[in-house]
Length: 412
Image (cartoon, rainbow, N blue to C red; front, side, top):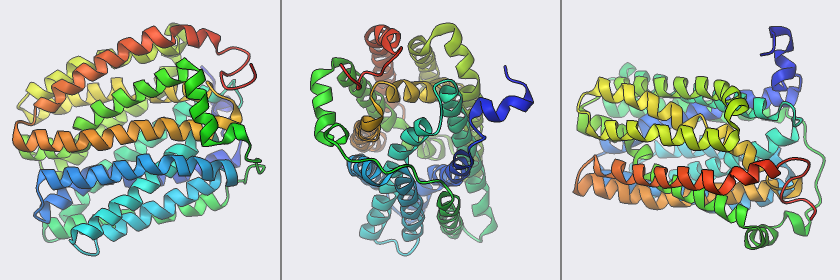
């Protein structure tokens, strides 16, 4: 454990670009956290049904998935800084567009812009962290970035739950809150202007989408990781985007309660992300991901069966912490599986698979909740998470040992 004097070196904070990136990331993810609380409730307050909410979320997710590959190409050609700037601009514009009118086509266009923003951010961030860190501190920086993302989400969750109360009615409150966070997202552009531009990279065959597809065909381990992302994404899409509606319509929680519940879960995940490097030291990366994900499954079952909002809040805190604290570990592992030229495209392929499957399953989740019960999607998600945890351990425990000396996508 480093002393306070060495914290900057321990996390790579001696780099001005890293600090500015983390600040911009905090502002961006506070907006995304606010959307997690407000967007669905805003649509419901406009008079739309759960099925329409599922459709808008699906549009956002499908757009994000489809935009990941172009975002990866942009990062390869013009650098990850450009991708991050596109993300901030698109997110702020999309959030503000949602508030102009209640016409479905305009709401869908706002969702499209938000999806593009999420794709650009998700595709750009992992290569940026790799480019701006050494192998010695890389896991620390990934964990710090993820923890800050969770704290930002927490702040967005909490404030978005409280801010609507300052307006005269719910709809005005949700609209005003979206205005605030649209401005916050646009503000995140400012620190990104100070991020140092990376040395231009020539776009080679090895950086192209076609080469990424070729890698999948020739390296089974990459295809397996892509499949794991698909299964996790499909399971998450059934429940995660609709959790605030679950709390509101099934348990009768208000927006303030929903914001607090979701923000506390982000705190647990953030703390877990800072602790997880020490778990990795003892168990290794693959065992850490497999064990913690499997441990989260019983809490999903409890969420589906509890009828008390405080009981659900408690188990949601534990479930979210265990499941999501593994994200920086898996992200670091995935980025080290390929060489530097392929990282933007590989990152975009992983995000595409994760997001497109969420886009499909959120439609199914909304349909199941509207037509059958709010509990049913949770049981399907439990099965998918269990299968993925087992596959992840079986498939990658040997691959982890090979990540010494060179990455999979380099020479050979």
